Length: 249
Length: 379
Image (tube, rainbow over all chains, first blue to last red; front, side, top):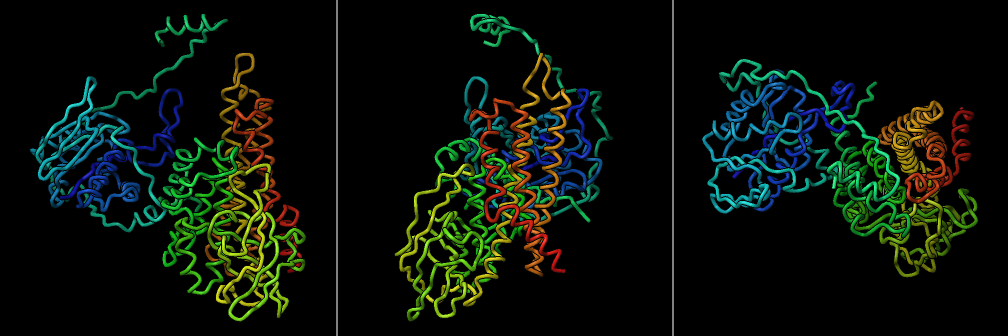
C-alpha cells in the first residue's frame, strides 16, 4: 500500500515581511506548508512500520520541481507533480479535481494525507473536496493514525475530547499540526533528494474540464493591526489589576 | 558568476539552522558553563551526518563538499561556538586523513569518524613550538614493525574523545617531521585536565602526553619526512572551520544587536531610532556580509585544490579577516547592549568571549597576514 501526501507550495512564511499591513512577497523563496510537513512525517512513520512508498503530490508552477526536494529530503520516496502557472493562485474548486485525477494515476494508494489547512490561505477545503471526487471516506483533525489490515484507526482531537474512528481504506485523512514533530533530514537525504523519482505532468495532460478561473477573488489581504496599549503600572498589584481588566488573566 | 545557493544548499543551511535552534540553543549556556557537549547531541550530529560532510560516500561521508560544510558550520557556530569548534577540529583531522591516508587507513578510520562514533584530532603544537615545525621535539623511534612515540602536545582539540589523532613527531632515523595516526586512548596516551579557556567552551582543549605509545608502522600518514606538507595542508583546511566558526559568531552578534536595539527603549522610543545605533547595525551587516562571502568562496575553493600553497594563502586571508572581524562585531554588538551586555542573561556576553578565540586559534592573525603577504611578495 502506498501513501500519498498532498503538499502545497507557498511563500516561505519566515521570510515574508509586512509593509503597511501588506505582505511583501518579492524575492521570498517558495517552501512547503508547515502542516503539510506534519502530514509527510505521519506518512513516513507509517511507511517505516507498514512498508510501501510515500509519494508526495503537488500542483503548482514550475518552481514546484525544486520546492518538492524539501519533501523528498524529509522522507518521501517519489514525487508526482502537476505543473501549470495557473494553478498557483487557483482555489480549492480547481485544485481538487487536479489532485483527485492525479491520485487516480498513482498505483495502490491506501491513504491520502493532507495538512489540516494550507500554510497560506488555510481554507481547509481540499481534503474534503478530493475525498468527495474520489468517493473515499474522509477523516479530519487526525492526531494519530494506525493501519490495521484494510482499515485505519484514527484519533481525532476535538475541542472537547478525542474521538477514535475506524475507517476503510483507501481514505483521505487531514492531520493536525501537533500530530508529530517533523524530523530533521540528514545531509545525504538532502543532497540526494533531487535524484529521487519524479513524475511531472503538464496540467493539460490530465484532460480535465476545470471551472473558469478564478472562482474566488481575494479583495484584500491585510496583516492584523497590533497597537500597544502602553498602560503604565506602578506596582505588582496594579499590574495584576490591569491584566485582569484587559482579560489577560 | 552565480552567488545564489542551490535548492540543496538552501535546504542544508536550513537543516543546520533548524538543528542548532532546536537542539543546541536550549543548552548553549549549559555547554558554555560545563565545558562539555552532551553525548546525545554528538550522537544526533552523527545521525545527521554532520561529522563527515566533505568526505566521499565511499568512506562513509556525505559528499557535501567543503561548500556544504561552511553552510552548516556557520549555522552551528551562530548558536554554539563550542560545538562549532569541536566540529571544525574533527573535520580538519578527517581532511588530512582523507588527503594523505592510504586506502586501508581511510577504510579503517573514516567511516566511524564520519558517523560521529569517533571524533578526530590533529596534534602538532607543543609547549615550545608554537607553529614552527623546526622546534618540534616529539619523537618516533622505529622498533621492528612499530614506531614508539614520546612527547607532549599542547592545546589539542577533541583529545578527550576516542578516535584517530594525526600526531606529528620527529622520525628518529631521518630526523624529519613525520605524521602518524594514533588511536586516542591507546596504551601510553593520556591527557591533561581541560584548559579553562575564555570562550568556545564545550570545544575542549587539553594537552596530550605520549609515553611510549606503540604505533604500527602502517599508521604512518604519508611518507617519512612528509609531515610539513601534511601540516600545511591540514592547517589550511582547518582554517575553513575556524573562519566559518568566526562567521557564525559575527552573524550571532548582528542578530543579537538587531533584536536588542528594537526592544530597548530610551524615552519611549526604541534605541534603533538613533543614528549612532543605526551606524553600528550597518557596520555589523557589512562585517557579516564580507566574512560570509570570503567563507563561502573558501569552501568552494577547497573542493578542488590544485595548488596547495595558493589555497593556503586564501585560507590565511579568510582566517585573518574573519577572526579579527568577529571580535570587532561582537564588541560593536556589546556596545549596542551597554552594560546589560556584560551580564550572562544576554547572549552577547558569551558571543564576545567566543569571538576572542577567533584571531588566536590555529595561528594568530598576524601570522595569517604573513602568509598572505608572502604569497604576493614571492611572485
